[in-house]
Image 1 (spheres, rainbow, N blue to C red):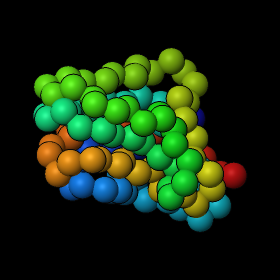
Image 2 (spheres, one colour; image 1 turned 45 degrees about the vertical axis):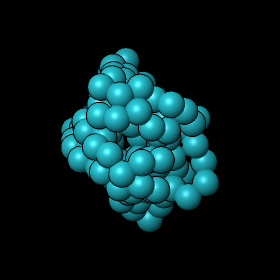
Image 3 (spheres, rainbow, N blue to C red; image 1 turned 120 degrees about the horizontal axis):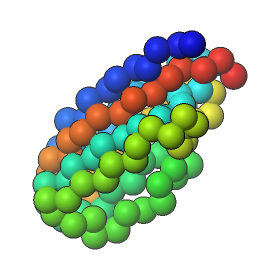
Length: 105
């Protein structure tokens, strides 16, 4: 069985930021996520440029977090070659981590 990749999240940029780069011919399968938001803002996790994986988390409260635990199955999979991205409505800190696997298409 393939081991998990672990990516920390340390973003404070308005707009879209790439959390995990895409790899041609492979999908990113997300198994566990922790996000902590410092200041109230809108956030969203997307599959590359177009597909929302979380839907918009509008007015996500300040000093709050989301933890999506490991269940044995991926919570999200990107399309082959697409990166996993975070969209923020403000240039304030979002921190956390993601555990994922890279899977052949």
